[in-house]
Image (cartoon, rainbow, N blue to C red; front, side, top):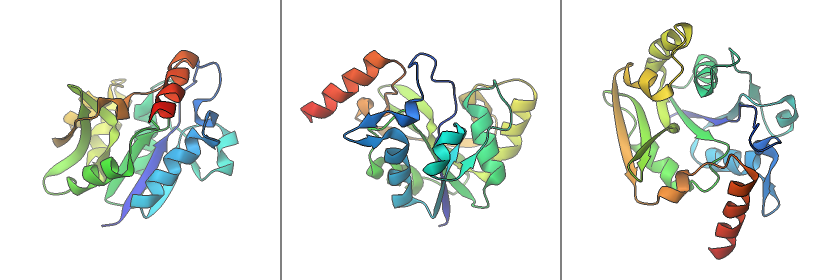
Length: 189
């Protein structure tokens, strides 16, 4: 199955105080970590959103609409993609292992329009596989100003969830304190 991979790197990183995509763990920028993982399971990869500075790491697909959160990046990526299935990974969740991405893709297909990760009782709609069939509903939500990704995708049709035991894989880092905790956690592994 041909799958396009998109690293979601939009957003202002205002709580972090600098671009999260360029933060380094063990000498590797978060953007590099995410792209490396996507390349292991996808036939092509790109960065959805993000600054021009990220172009040195890969092709950037600009958000089609500013101020609408990650939904704009999802829509722009799906509009750009020729693949039926598209895997999304946020740049600020560097602990998601490649095997988790494989599990999401293995659940794709059939009647589903999307497959999302679930861990710790929470659904993580930004870490998931989306079919091009979801695009019209996502575009409609964007045009109507309804920017909640989970609500938009659930309106598109059948959505499956893949449950993971390890909740920590999906924790995003938004502040310098959370990033410091992540570095400590990696040191303990």
